[in-house]
Length: 170
Image 1 (cartoon, rainbow, N blue to C red):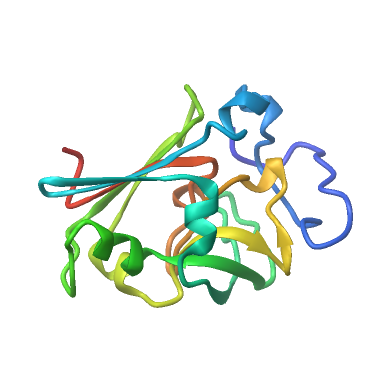
Image 2 (image 1 turned 30 degrees about the vertical axis):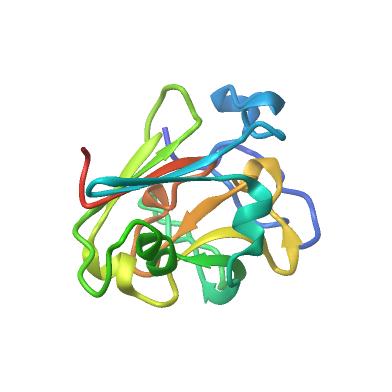
């Protein structure tokens, strides 16, 4: 189910291993096009961001690998995006961020959502990434935004993120 199946990621900044492509899970251009929004929820508060608004937030970089539960991993990639702690702050959460539900525009299948722990969210290396190795994420690496969380297995680095619910699954 998770092991790479002869997928060639190509070369360049996005040229590293993937398990599932955008096409294989039914991601359509309209799902991640100009109408895409990121919904950030917290206890009693919600903020909706366009891609442009996400890009206008302070951007950070982290060097992290993708470590797959199937036994393969990438070398460290240079990810760029918004710290998860900055997104939590938008909905009023500070130093302690209870578990966070991450949801994808992926409609079905395995791992369309994941739960991140407080320590994963608070780690300054954990991002909602919009770039990798200096380039915009490719569709297969999760454009327009994906989670890259320190200490999280690859399946919890959700691609095609559309909603972050800080404080649980509510």
